[in-house]
Image (cartoon, rainbow, N blue to C red; front, side, top):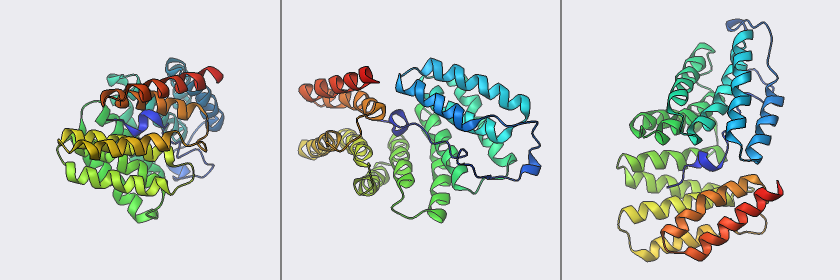
Length: 275
């Protein structure tokens, strides 16, 4: 199955210029330039240079700690969670997850949407590292905060549902997983530029049905709905789409659609070449 955070970079929920904590709790000698740091990080992602992104972020992590800029530290750690997950760096990823959860409590932001998004990233890292049992209660916490603060149509909820479903499938909660995939699809098919994300949920649903030995026509229906969404001419032709293609094409190959797999692989490579 495809992890949503493999194809979409985690948001930097503390980078919007708002203070989500009491500054008196975190006297800092200075602040790191979070916005510029994340802009440069995006440049590494566009080149698919995860090693470069890690080195860049780790440098600024040390700067934030030297300044006692805990807000900046949390923003950088949040981004590093995705890098460590993608590079399978279990040791650094686990340490980053623990520090992120600790900072959320220390900065007194645990009930906010921004904190929930970071917890979502932590949960997804745990799931990727084979610890779905640790991820599930974190996803449940995120869902509670999202339900209290967001509308049902908010795309953040779709991101939660897709990743929560992956963890539920791992622990055998397949009925709950199916419902969450369908909820994610409903949100993203109606969201602006949401078709790519809906496609991912359709592919994950196909894998779930395959594991359940569901009739093949139901699996095929999911795959072709995903393919049509992936190839929609309105999709932005950027590195995000390239990454999605690179993560999706193996699934089509697995289900026996070699030509579609090759097509998506080639499209991904062409987009990266233009970047």
